[in-house]
Length: 66
Image (cartoon, rainbow, N blue to C red; front, side, top):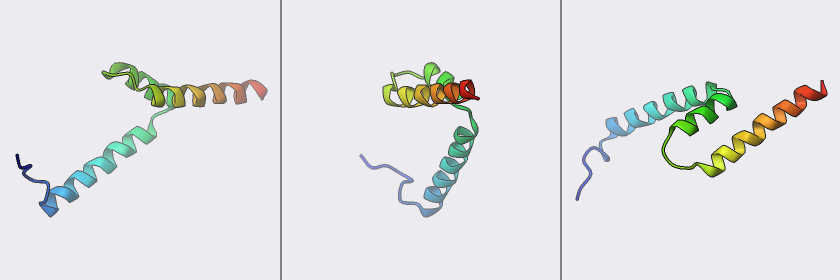
C-alpha cells in the first residue's frame, strides 16, 4: 500500500505549516485549558496529564507564597 502525497514537497511544506499553526494555538493555552482538552480526547494521556497537574500545582503554591 502506497501513501500518496507524502513525497510531494509542496504537501510536506503545507503539513509543516499546519503543524506550526496547531502548535501556536496549543502553546497559547493555559495549563488548565490544556487539561480540559485532554479530558475531552479519547485515551488516557497519563504522562501529559501528570505533567500539567504538576504545573498547575506549582503555580498554585507559588501564588500561595506571595
